[in-house]
Length: 91
Image 1 (cartoon, rainbow, N blue to C red):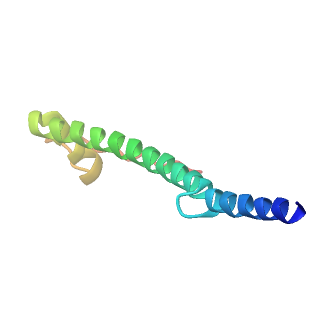
Image 2: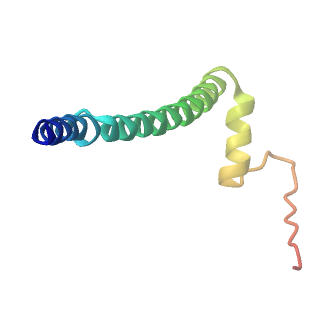
Image 3: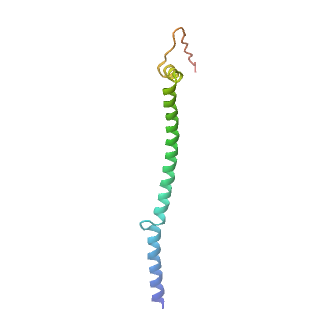
């Protein structure tokens, strides 16, 4: 009787081991869920970035104001008749 009990217990442990630690087991499932969550966050961040870039492209295609703003901020350009003042923070 004890031999049967030990045999069934060993069989149960072997089957459970495969369920928890085998390929496609619970450990793999948790890792996969974490991976999916991380990728979802990355996708959301990239979608927001793409939306900002698409808006910027649209602004550059449609109006001169966006081009002028970019020329002023990135290239330091000014219009004719304007005076450029640079304020330096003493700190």
